[in-house]
Length: 338
Image (tube, rainbow, N blue to C red; front, side, top):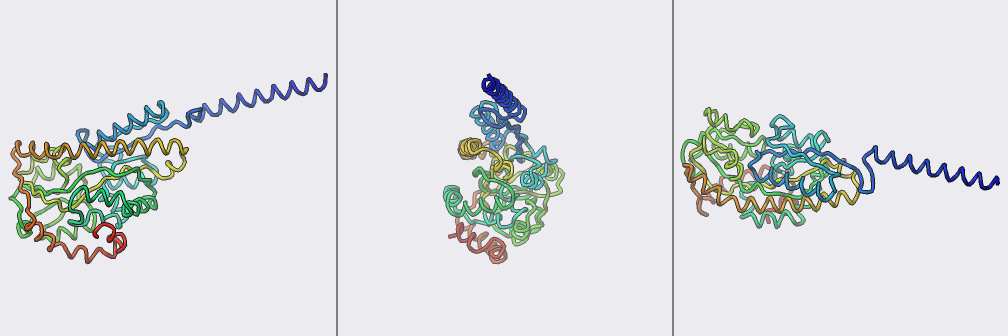
């Protein structure tokens, strides 16, 4: 009888502890499917851009694959950081924000080595750029991002940056003399545009339209999708298509957050990100030709530099490589330039 009572007590106690354990898991958001997450994601551009659409696609895939455990809210125009892209990447790195799509140009404010991807005329075309990014050079970039607190979930395509202005067509370096051009706030671009004889001005992208409208600046440079989705044709008459600087975007998540996730959830995010990035790249490539046509139809004069004309700009910008080789690191530069 004694043995029966002891066994019964142990059975009751075990059942009670199991029930408590189950309640604790439900309270912490755990269960058979794993933890629950409500993540925020910031993108630099507006809701009409491929960035935002890819962010929404990512959120849709992740929510479906996780049976609703992981939700991602996507915010356009850097709403979570007052329109400041530089603040966004810092917040993703320190965990104040969870995720973002940001250009490597903006990330290079945090670590100048990442500016190598924006070096003038370093890539001949988009396919070459992604071939390098998907190889050893890209893995070196990923390691730099991780060092800075961001886990990379792949690259998207902002595209080659083109020049717009409201003064005249730009066909040779001398045409730029004295122009006030808005550039992203990194030292390499400041030096680059000074080499071209301009008066470069740094400001957050959210201020650019108004500055162009008011004549505070004469021009700016950005990929076609940003120019089109931001309707810069309303305040700019001319575009020079010259593919002078490539602009990949990083789908990044706070590394500490990512590392704390289960392996299953990490893989879920990586797989979804791969699909979202591929969608973003495909949409950007499809749209660019259509957007260029629409910009022309809306009155923007577009001039495409030929190889000889590009060569004049390349020669004018060679001093940038001399100055920044040591900043980027010769090994990293070699991965992308050779």
